[in-house]
Image (cartoon, rainbow, N blue to C red; front, side, top):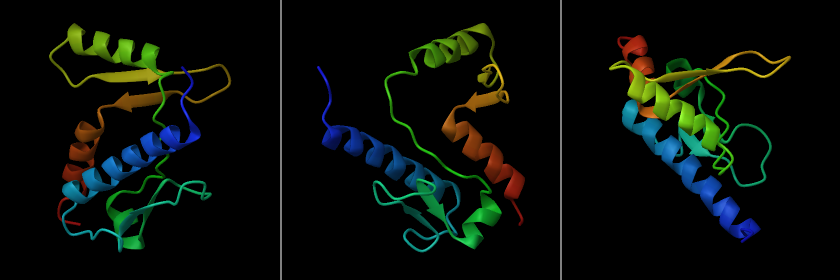
Length: 119
């Protein structure tokens, strides 16, 4: 069954809100709607907007995609989880493109929090 445009936008909005709230939880000094806010659906640019102060703590451009076409990626993540008692990480690559790394978002935020402590 095909999903409606409204339901796809709602899924995307929920993910953007989750990312915003996770960043606010990771960096309590930042304020909602002042330092971190979500783009309006259809607005160009990043999906989660960051103030200059937020960019100092989290210097990343955030694009949120809530799609069902990532099954193979999640299968690889599950394999990484089952292979060792270490933090799971996936390195993926397509021809002509840079390799990317995929980490659990909460684990990634914890790494960034540790890196920016005292800044």
